[in-house]
Amino acid sequence: MVTIQSKEGLQNELHAHRQGNQKIALVPTMGALHEGHLSLIQEAQQLADIVVCSIFVNPTQFNDPKDLEKYPRPIENDMKLLKDAGCNILFMPTVDEMYPSDDASWHIDLGRLDSLWEGEKRPGHFQGVTQIVYKLFRLVEPDIACFGQKDFQQVMVIQRLVELKELPVHIHICPTVRSKEGLALSSRNTRLSETGKQKALAIFRSLSYIKAHIHNNAIPEVKEEALHILTEDEGITVEYLAVCTARTLEEATQIEPGETYVALVVAWIEGVRLIDNMILT
Image (cartoon, rainbow, N blue to C red; front, side):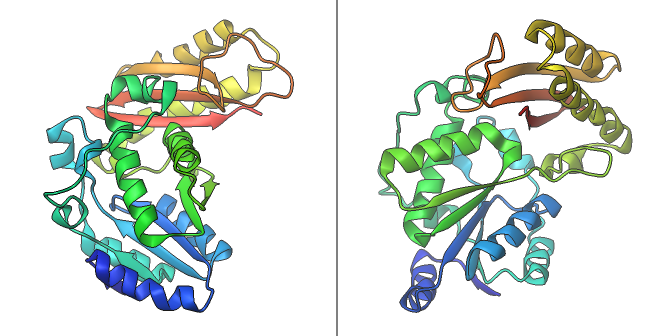
């Protein structure tokens, strides 16, 4: 595995691969890697000849400076995991490298995706996400980019970015990786106690309930029971729970044949904000 910190070094490294007509896949991350990230690397290896993984804790997508400060950065462990996984190139730039002093301002029209759910709760977050992803896409010029389903709204936002900028990159959505009990793997889980992790299993139970009952019962009734599953144990605060049309993330009032839906949930446990979702078709 080659580790590169400069944009120029990355482009020089990739030039030879492009000359050989090798297909390039990008897996953008903020580090603190776990099995979920490694599954993205594995899927990328099936789809391309060269896999580039970026590790960059992007400051423009954090609303709370304390959240940015607390974000885990176990870089030595991350590098070992990527090397063992067979990643070809690790791109690990500094903030100054990605955001030089003469950097142009950024804003992109994401429509309602910028104000719904995560967009409403974290103003400016998706502008920061699209800003760094666009920079990475322009640098790497990947044929394929792999993202996890766990951050479903983020993937829809990135798909919108690709369409607006007419980028020649295929967005590949990889299934959420879960523990055997159902907890979606996340960097934030490292901040939960064992008790907190057990409480968090209610998130998976509530999503599974929605999936099992949404096609035979009214949405309000299903949501009410799912909320009961989430809140019957003390220590869980629900920020939002919604059943949405997958394409737009607009909240659904009834299930229409042939349409794809997604259940979204965000809950707080032990001061940690956990996000999850489940495709309902």
